[in-house]
Length: 284
Figure 1: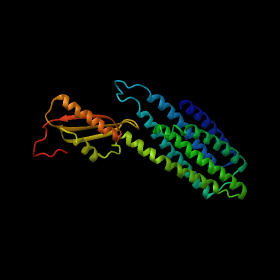
Figure 2: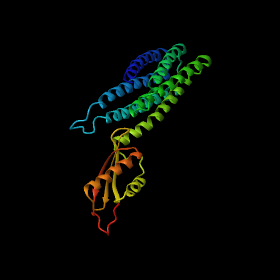
Figure 3: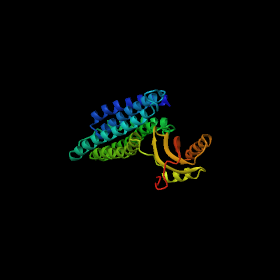
Figure 4: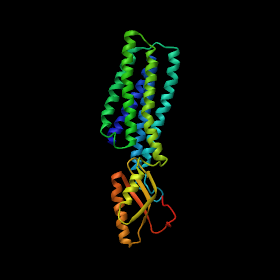
């Protein structure tokens, strides 16, 4: 996958440069907006590649969980960059709507068609890997959004060439920007939740019932859950048990870990307690 990612980086860098030149020559805001999006694609892919390399580093005394969150950080930064680029495009689109400019459609059509072909090829390259991590998915979404925006630019170039409706150029730029906002929102939301150690989507009531079904368990409480990486869920809890030998207590811990795996929990820490709550207290 790394080779495909590197190839996509170089391809998008070339597209970006060609669209900047083509946008300046043709006077097309939509093409310049697409070039900004392609530039963010290039940075996104580059960041994803660097994050993948960093995440492979082994854990150490300082970073005991390893470097897996580097991919989450890059996914967040990639998505924020989409918001910034989209805002710039929207501002310029409003200016152009108030004062439409003539667009040289021949140059626009040629450059946008090349960009569309290159973007579509990049999407095909990364499609099979798009579900492997949030980091790769964020870069993949950049490419999907840019492919769709390239389609709009090509169609817009045809309409402007045939019917001379040059106000369509900033309208297309505005639509592209709105789509970019939409695509970035979910990744920003999810990556922030991981970075802020928000609890993943777990039903604590069902988990509590599951643990308390185990023979020897009186109650389970003090639940904490968080994600170290996109697919690594850590869970800890306190469990009050009957007075028993250590070997029997270990069997309970093993059973808890086994039962919690079906909830997607990859690492479980259980603190056992015995007779810590008086009869008058309610253990929550």
